[in-house]
Structure formats: structure tokens, C-alpha cells
Amino acid sequence: MRVGQQAVFPERGKLGSSDRLPLRLAGHPLPLLAYPAETITNRNFQRFDLGWLDRYFLPPTLTPLADGPEVEVLDAIEDDNRSAILPEPVATLDGLPFYLSVKGVGSTVDPFSLRRLDSAYATELTDDPEVRERLRSASGDRPGGVITGELWLRGSPYGGQGLPHAMTALRVSERADLTSIEGFRIAPVVKVALLPKAVEARLRSIHWYRKYGDRLVQELRLVPSNVRVYFHSRSTVGNDPGRVFDLYSIDSAAKAHQFETNFVRSGMALLTLFARTLTWDPARGRYSGLDFQDVWLDKDAILAPDGTVFFVDLEGIDLVSVEREGVREKMEDQIFRSLYEFMFAYEQIEGERERRFGSVGSRKRRFEAIVVESLQEDPFVRTHAEARGLALQVRNRAGEESLWFDFLLVDT
Image (cartoon, one colour):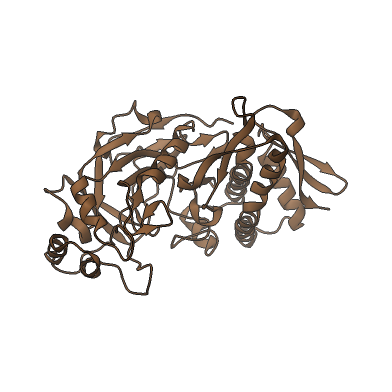
């Protein structure tokens, strides 16, 4: 299910008024100082002039560790635990404005206590006297967190990003038609920026117990907002749907209906990612498809202004393979894995729509109608009514009808 495969990168700060919903995002200010960097570019974006992204970025807390003056200062805002985002859109992809998000700019949260992680604390953690002195040279209470060298969750340094995880996210991004993998919407990684080795070594010295051994990098990605589904954001559809409706100017029943339909359409694509990417590997005699590892809908997906769910933390999506007899089980497991989170978010959206614009009858019948409408043009998931309720017929990209199966979504 292709989207538009259209991308526009205008002169920075001059996204045209004709672009859809060019919001200014809200959040706590976090200046980012930009320095030249070696980068790896997503092949889907190599045709664009993106030299201004050949940068790595440090918050003011860490600028004493850089060599040479910055080439630019960006007025960003905090986004998630270790990311920052530019509040003004920098591109239009597939009809929606997108914002630059930098993943791996430091965390302000001590992973082992309630103490704030800042440059003063970092001086106690480093085993390098030069790094200690550099950090002490910073005067005043500078905003920002700390990128550490502490090995974290196997593949990343705490507060930063590791090369293997970033390359996984880049590979997933390169599979997409800009923002869509067969209808599964993503926030693409445009570039992976490698931190200079001297800066990397200084950051690596800041640790508690174990040092991360691979390259330290940053993901430069394009996101449609900073509104998460439930966790990792100050504004989420899960904890404050009213604020989200106000932010996105959902001021009519028609707009609310379209927002809800887009959410269900994109959410169903997320629940069926393995089926949408299923291929037969004759060399291995197995079926392969994309699956989710340690990433989740509630905290690793973002809600666009039109209601579409975009998966943003792509490092936990990877290709898995199963025997033929395991295909259906994998598809069902993937649906069940995120179904509750999907339904929870839907309930918040529907509840807010009803509060503002009135009830439209039975909760079940309303949901069934939205599902049927949203999947009318989906080649991988169709709906049909059974005596027992509304079922999804889950097809697959491999085109093997013998692997289709029905999933009961709503009981009678």
C-alpha cells in the first residue's frame, strides 16, 4: 500500500503555507550546537541536497568536549529521554510536514538514582583527568543532558546511540517508500552521524560500571510530531487526548472522524507488519518478515496531525524468519503484542470525539464501522462479518492464499 513517495526540502525555515498543518511544536528549549561530522545517508534521500545535516550535535552541557567551534546553533526542544527536535518543520513527506529529530544527544536522568545527570555529575563519573577538567571549565548551569559511555540495553550507550542500533534503523528506513513499508508508516532515519573519535573517547570515559565498545553515533530522523501514543512525551493521546485535539485543531465532527479513521488504518498496518513484509527465502527454506523486538506502540510510535501512527524508534525492528508452520503463529503473536495498546489509544481518541461532538450509538458498532471504512483499500487486511462477529482476513505480501487466516476482532 504505497503512499505518495513525495518529498520536498525547501529552504530551511520556509516551509510553504500550502503545506498541511505546519505546526510549531511545544517543549522545553534545548539548544543544540552543531559540528561537522562524517555521515551515512539513507539511499532514498541521497538525491536531495542535505549537506546541512552532515553534523553531530551536542547540548551546552557537553560542548567543552568538542574540538573546534560549532558551525551552527539550533533552537531545538527536548524530545523523549535522549532526543531533541526542531520545533519548525524542515520537509514535507507524503503530504505531511516533518521535523528534524536527533536521537542520542544525552539524558538528564541518572539510570541508577533520582539524581540529575548533568556536566557536574559527569565529572565524578569519568576516569579521564582531561575530560574532568574540560567539563569543569563549563561555567554556569548549562541546559542539556549527558551522553555517556555506559553500556546500556546491550546495544547502546546510555544517553546516546550505538552504531549497530542506528544501522538497523537505517536499514528499516531504506526499505520504505520514504515513509511507508506496505502501509506501515515510519519516521525515517535520513542520516547516521558518526561522532569524531576523539569526542567519542571522551564521552566513553563517562561511565558507571561498563564501557560501550562500538562507535557512538546519532540518528538524524524526520518525524511528523513529538506526540507519542502514551509514554515518553509530555503530550500524548493516552494521557491528554483533549490537548492533542486542540493542538491538531480537530474542531469538527468530520475532522475527528478522519483523524480516527487514519489512526485505525495505520494502527492495523502496525499490527500486521509481518504479513505485509512476508517473503519466501528459497535458499533457507523459510519465510521472512519484519517483527518488533524491544519496541512498543505506546512509547515508540508518534501520532501525526492527521491521526496517522508513525513508528519512530526503528532500532528494534528487524527481519525474522520462521518455518512455514510457524507463519500463522507469528502473525497472530504480532497482532496480540500491540492490540491492547492500539485499543487503549483508540478508546482515548473515540472518548474525546464523543465528548466534543456527541455519541453515535453502540461502542462496538462504532468501532466496527471505523475498521471497515479504514481497511477498504488495504490489500493485506480485509474485513468480513461472521456469525460470531467482525473478523479480519489477514493476507500477506508473499501472495500465498494458503497462509491467509481470519482473526476475530470484535465479538457479537
